[in-house]
Image (cartoon, rainbow, N blue to C red; front, side, top):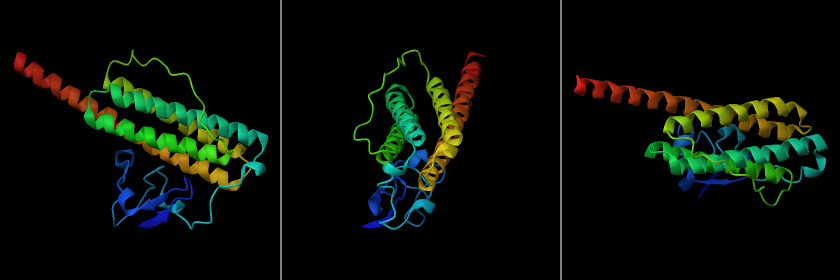
Amino acid sequence: MIIHKCYICGMDIHTKSIGLNASTMLEKNSTNALLNCPFCGVSNQFFTVLDDDLEGLVMELSLEAKSIIEKAVKLEVFNSTFYEEASERVDCKILSVTFKELSKIELMHARIHMRLISMDKPPVLHKPDYSNRETDYAFIKEAEAREKHAITFYSKNVENINIEKVKKVFEALRKVESEHNSIMSTKAFELCQVQNQNINELSTEIG
């Protein structure tokens, strides 16, 4: 049963999809309160009627706006592949799930931008070597840095978009990235707490 449609990503939200990608959200969806799109993470203020979408705007975009959106595609694809890789490298299973779900959300962000400029396929980007990230904490800190970069990108470029609807997309995704950054900051704090506890326990055993 379709209960909503997301204006930003265009996905139909079914009752069975409400709980998808829950680890990427500060406030979780429930059957009684659908707060965010489970596919792209934007708030429920962007749930709207089926005929109010972002199709057919490419001809109205300025050359500068198209260039910015092309960069946005690359940014989101790059971050999606990072999270996919991180999900396979970290030791903490809960963190692995979070990274896996973040990868899906960021890829949806790339698809949103691709739809705006009628891009059929995502770009193939160089894959960095992540072998020097030896701890879960290192991946969390890189995730924080990437989210902060995405926030800056959307904040910096929104004023150079010449269509109001597309500006709303940038603002919506900036808020999602801000939420992701908060989640990563929380994960870093929790991990430090666990590590400190383990050190204290080890010190007690040795003493």
